[in-house]
Length: 236
Image (cartoon, rainbow, N blue to C red; front, top):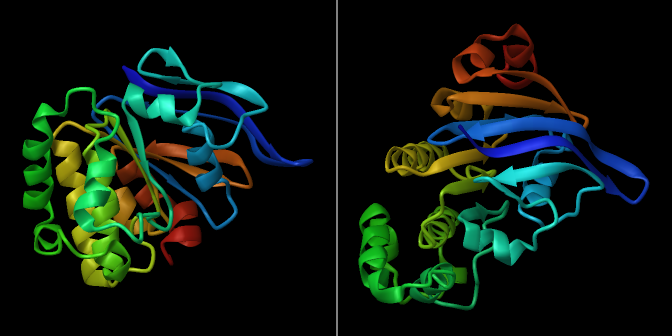
C-alpha cells in the first residue's frame, strides 16, 4: 500500500519548470531513494511534498490524505517529518532544546522522557552533549541531532535530504546504518542522496531524476546494476 503517492507533479521557479510532471510512490515500510545530479530536482521534490514549495499541477497523497495544498506545519501533524539538506538545527539552542522542539507536535507529552532516552540510546554522542550549544557540534553530531529531532515526532514517513553531505567516510557509514535501524523500527524512509552507491545498497526501490523528470526506476539492486546508473553515478 502506498503511504506516499505523488502524481504528475509540476513545480516552477518563475517561468522555469523545475519538476516536469513526475510521479512516484513510497510504500509503507520501504526505503525509497531519489538519486540524480545537482539540479535534477531532488530537493525541489522534497520541499514540494512537505508543502514548502507550491505545486502548479499534480497531486500529493499521504496516508490517504490529499496534502497537495496543505500547509507544512499541518503535514507534520499527519506524520511526515523532513531532515532538510544542511541539517537546519537551531544553532543557538542546546542539544536537549533542539530535541524538545522536535516533539512539539505530539499531543500526548507523557512519553517525552521515554522518547528522549530512546534518542540518547540511538545517538550516545547526543547524550554526552545534551547541554551543549548545538552550533558548536561537529558536522556529524549536527546530522545526528537533526535526525534525532525528527524522530522525536514519531513520524510515519521520515524524509532525509542529503544526510551524508560533508561527512567523513566513517560517519557516512554510521549515518546509513542509523537509517537502516530507523527503518527496521517501523519508520518508512524517503531518501534524497548523492551517494548513489550507499543509498541504493539500503533501498527497496529507487528513482533516477534528470532535469526534473524521472528517467529510470527499479529496485535498489536493479539500479545499482544498471549500466546507465553505473556510468552516471557510480563511477563505472
